[in-house]
Length: 386
Ligand SMILES: [Zn+2]
Image (cartoon, rainbow, N blue to C red; front, side):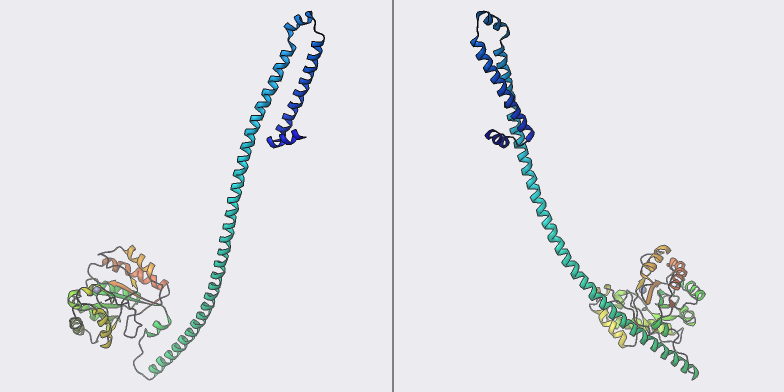
């Protein structure tokens, strides 16, 4: 009994335990036989037997057997001890990895809990946004009703005016309110390309706006005006260092181009575009705050300035490829109800002329109508940065 407890403590493997037990049992038995036999032999020893014994030596053989058994037992003991140590180490490692896995699990559980909280917060945000969207939808519907009322009132007014025989109301004002409208604009002309541009516009029956300056081709404003486009002002010299020196310098230059245009047409152009746009910062080098002052003062003097919200980028170099122009138009154009497209009308902008039919067709496909800018067109402008 004590032996089996001792064995089970030393030998964790039941096989080894049984094996050692078996070896112990058999060695004990062999030993007993040996002892009994030795006693018997010594009891009947005779001379002749002793002689015979010299040849056989059964006791010596038995001793070897016993030695073998004990050696085997010793080896088995050492092996099982090593096995026991290794198993214990493995168990330790397993326990350690179990602990770390449990830690991981608890960490995951914690992060899952916090993700849940986040999800709930985001869901409540989504609900908020949805309710806001719903209320904005309502507002939009109200605006649309207002617009349709305004439109029908406007149409009635136009009708009344027509019946009373007075001149018709501006053709395009209504489309600016109710439809998607594209305003094609050409800066820095007139030029050798102006007549080609006019031909294309005529072909599509599209009206545009020309921001002119003091070029040698200023007489073309006559045809521009006669064909229903807006002749608008861009300054006479377009020289930043001149026009942005002071308010006076700017208005002197603006008056100069205005007077030059009036030599050819009987209108006083009030639509203008600042060279570089109202957001230009180049003017800072000549006069700090000049754009802030001019953007207000031009309005005070009855002018309406326009920037743009779609840049054809035809000014980024001479003969910018048609595909690049179209890429820009398609990337930035067709997103607003009111697109003011910036293009240039100079002798070197041949690709602008080539791209123009595609630009017009792009906007037609997008459901836009075309209109020239007027002082009653809602202003499209950049933020002033000087
Ligand atoms: Zn310009």
